[in-house]
Every structure is written in structure tokens, then in C-alpha cells.
Amino acid sequence: MARVRERDVTAFEAVYDGFHRLVYGIAFKMLGDPSAAEDLAQAVFLKVWSSPEAFGGGNFGAWIARVTRNRALDVLRSRATRPETEMPANIPLEGSLDESVFARLDGERVRSALAALPDEQRRPIELGFFGGMTHDEIARRSGLPLGTVKTRIRAGLKKLRVSLEGSVL
Image (cartoon, rainbow, N blue to C red):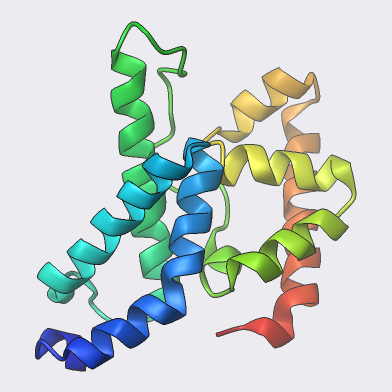
């Protein structure tokens, strides 16, 4: 990112090549529309190029995943304000789930690891991270107690961390 701040196009291309699948994967999973996911990915990488100082250091993968998720939530919120769509109005602002496990990993490996989880753990993780639902909303939707939802999410994330430990970027 230091080289991107210096307007090094080659460095930017390397960042894009390293993270475009992750950004697109999060956008597509949350928005459910390939065209909207492409637009969102373009907006995220435009932000990286035009405002590289926005990344203050630390884990770049976690930062770009957070930027992507926040932009996708913005799109979902804007859809919710239009009467022709049926999107929920109460989309969480930040961190309904521990996203650090997703942020450092290639999207394909994450999808594969998610698919290996038991459905009772995988489904609430997908609803929270990709669907933008809070733990309370997941509990209401599934008919499970809130504590059960939190326990299943925590257990699933722990399994993901273990299975993906060797896949960190």
C-alpha cells in the first residue's frame, strides 16, 4: 500500500490481483447480483486507488473486506428505501460477526470451508456475514434461542479458523 500511495500502478495491480476475488465474492454473496457485485468491486478498488491513505495499516485483507461489506450494506440500505424492493430496513451497521477469518482468505477457500461446516453452523454464519443480519434477526428467523445462534456461529467460526489456518494470505 505504501507503493500505491506513491501512485505505483504495478503495486495497485498486485493489490487488485490479490484481492479482487475476495471483494467480488463478498459483494456477490451480499447483493446476489453479478452486475451489482462488479459495480461494487469497482467502487472499492477505486477507493483504494483514489484514497490509499484510508488504509491506516494492519491487516489489509480485513480492511478491504470491511470496506466491501460496508459498501454492500449501503447498497442494500438504498434498495430498502425504494418501494419496489423488499429489503429489510434494519440492516446492522458494523460487525454482527467476527469477519477477520473471512478477510484474510481467498473467497474460493472460504466457500469450500463453509460448505464443509454442518448446516446448523454454516447457515447462521452466511446469514450474518453475507446477509447482513444481526444475531437477533438470525434467532427470530430460525426460531432458535439467541444463545444457541451465538454458540453455533462461534463454533463455526472456530472451525473455519482451524481449517483455513494454513490458507492465510
